[in-house]
Length: 284
Image (tube, rainbow, N blue to C red):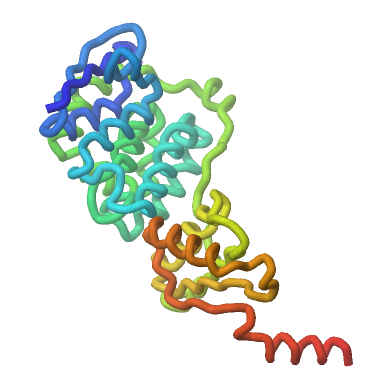
């Protein structure tokens, strides 16, 4: 069994990292000791100081637990909530807005991501547990209260909460107002209906799938899954000199690696007749 050492700042214990350590202790041996700064010591050449980085590492060395999500899409969502917990749950004014987003996300869910517990739940619960404004403001958000109460009854949450939460230094309004809301999220689709959303991913078959393409593809997949809709993958074959079949194959392989499953494949040339009709109409 792998042995790791987690040193925590006793006056401001990292509840998210401690929760993660508590969940993986059956697979990974993590010793916890108090010190000046929070740090996960893996080896003499590898240490982590950021709480979210510590949680991610612990989840990755215990993949069977699924704390970092079951696939790449869920991992992306987990990352969103990790950033959300660090940047949005940081003060009374921002807290109200953040709770509204949480309330909406949990309206039909038991867990924030997928159908089982992940780092998303651990980090957000930890942030709320250590927030002085949560008990009073949380009463207005029934779904968040339900989710928080459910997790609070689980043994790991009780163990960490009872032992460390009282030592957590309360967040001050002044320090929270200085922090910027710099967090990515999936944009709402006003008026979208279940089963009627159609999204299209049109990569250019003139190179490899770069990070922008990957983000666009994952965004489309999010709406495909969320609304039980259709994802169309469309290649532009109007310039044979640039759009090469080899690149097309590579992009398809990359999309498969991202675990994205388009419902339909199309080409611009499929619609030449329609395009020509509109062009002639504009000329007239």
